[in-house]
Image 1 (cartoon, rainbow, N blue to C red):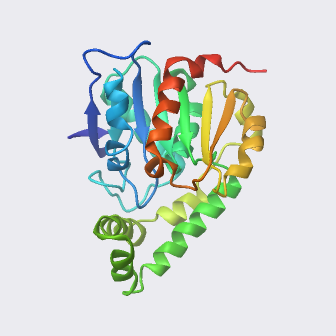
Image 2 (tube, rainbow, N blue to C red):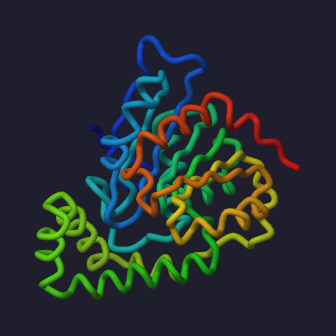
Image 3 (cartoon, rainbow, N blue to C red):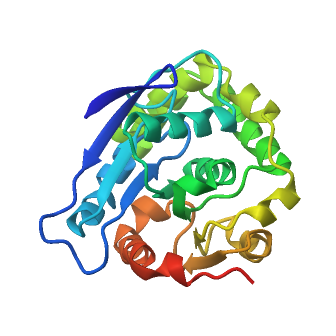
Length: 269
């Protein structure tokens, strides 16, 4: 791992180089953007990242601000702040060609916001259990974060999580507690500007959205396909929100197909 100064924030970055004998198809630069609060780059490192590198792709993972080993400033957690970090990261790494963004949950929200802002830098987006940044999304997400922060004030919560889900999950929740109690993230998400819904019609970056069939977001697939000009959705049976860690063996083939040909096959109507 290495630390990169990007836009005044120290970002913890992990890079996996492509294999010497890549799979068929041109290698791509793939940037993996993780979720919020109880997530960091390790959710990719232990699931899909090695397979992407083994297929010859240049794989970048990073801890978003406030997460993992990256800086945790007390404020500055609107979607536009996370999007700016991604832009600064690509600049710091001197990546001139368009990259593929893979976003899990909130990471997909950041990826979409970034693509709307800098479409020339994005070759395609594959997002897992994600939704665009809208006013409804901001209200829902800030409520979830504020509720979690309140619950974590109860001293019984962490011992129960460790006993029920194990030490690894408890460690993630401890990191989330520092983020939720030590920053303005819930307030910033609630008040951050979001794109007007009609602006998404101008986004011609290809998008593949993957949802667990048991997820609350699965029903939004038709709406998303109507919102984004170049979008297809995939539903994974038997899974909910945790598609990435729950079934990486399903996600990896989807990703490899998307990187090889899938993103080129999506033509705007």
